[in-house]
Amino acid sequence: MICEIPVSSCQSRAQSWRDDEATPLMAGLPAGEFVMGENVGDKFATDTERPAHRVRISEPFALGCFPVTVGEFRHFSPGHAPDDADELPVVRVNWREALAYCDWLSGRTGRACRLASEAEWEFACRAGSRSPFACGDEISPSQANFFYDENGLRIGTGRRTPVGKYAPNAFGLFDLHGNVCEWVADSWHPDYHGAPVNGSAWIDRNDSRRVIRGGAWDYLPRLLRSAWRDWRPIDFCADNIGFRVATSDLKKIPEAAR
Image (cartoon, rainbow, N blue to C red; front, side, top):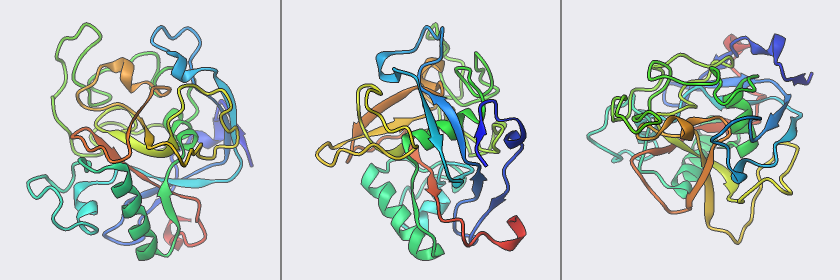
């Protein structure tokens, strides 16, 4: 069943599961249709978010409830960030390493894991909303981890915070606004002219740029908006970029989560 915006009956928290103690907690999301891109009247919207366009995601999929944590990533790369706490979102991971983690996770769980497409990511972030943020027209430091207000005043914690500290959105997903930016599968395109409308990733094999979404702990609120998008080189690492895992392979959901 396709749920269109507003999400109505699909807006309750999704059921979640974990394949084993070392793997990310996943949330099942419904198929759906939504408007991707610029919010009407949003003074911070740019051409990278235009034209706004309707996207139909025809099949349910699952997304990590949180960005992949340091503790989870260490099962794949034991020496990573030895001084970081397990519950922090992992950073200093480039796009290739995020993909390699997904491949490793596929082997461990027996389900095909991957990075979300840019459209899937925004669908999950919006969770039925059509405002600049899933929580409304504005966002506060009590709702997400960011550093500066729009006047450049420091109002945030100035560092990553453990995943799940802030309230989830209507799909039961955490930290899609702020904390760390997140790699997605898509190559960078400077606008949405010609973008897929079926929720698939938009890939240019000859382009080494990949999209990041969500904004980070050291950003302004305008860079946490649901429609905000940017890019980094495929081999780029930073202390404010992580990722979360997606899968369309829902055949093996543990019985307790059904």
